[in-house]
Length: 116
Image (cartoon, rainbow, N blue to C red; front, top):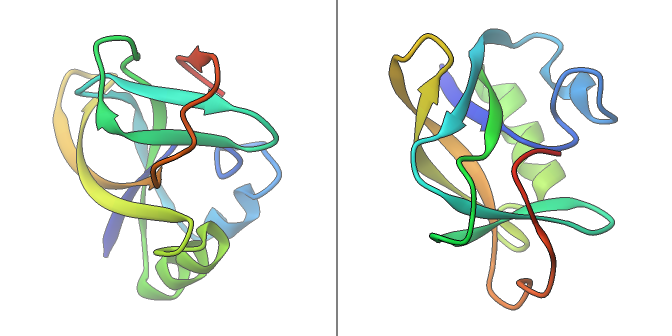
């Protein structure tokens, strides 16, 4: 099983949420560290921690390998988005580690958001 935290179009009710139809929802939470979430035509997280960013709101899921591979393809991992293990604080206060997709360098010309 693989644990991911999603912040954009994979969230429940969003355009790509069907990718997670077989996933187990673990809970909602925020990134333990602050990141800059940019929203242009697509939402994306910049890879460096930043005091000018936010503890980004996420949904956390446990997914099987087939779903993990499908999400990797959707996100263009590792060509566009690159995933890495990230600490998440769940809404009940517990901490967990989950894969989060970050964009590469050169995409930081935007207004930063806490949630998409």
